[in-house]
Picture 1 (cartoon, helix red, strand yellow):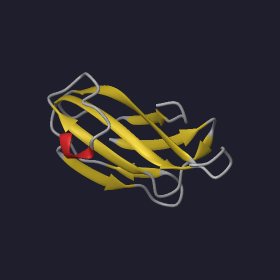
Picture 2 (cartoon, one colour):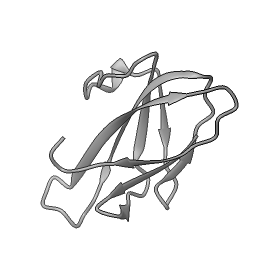
Picture 3 (spheres, rainbow, N blue to C red):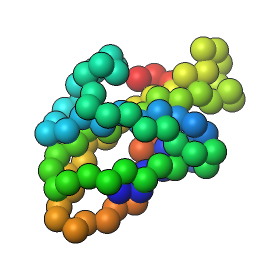
Length: 96
């Protein structure tokens, strides 16, 4: 799956994406609860290869256009099917 991390349409460069396998509910903001982590490129994008199943994706990054501490984060549940390719937007906000 191809992910795009954005805050109000602005790409979040170098955001971290955490993935929890076999989950459809938010496992919390403690990154130790996740099975793997990935770093987005300068355009806020990352490619992740996964097997069919349910996943929860949680992203966290910095947006210096918001008030300190500049942290934005958010997540979405995803179900992937066999041979499915998806381009997903993972919206983040300062309120999560």
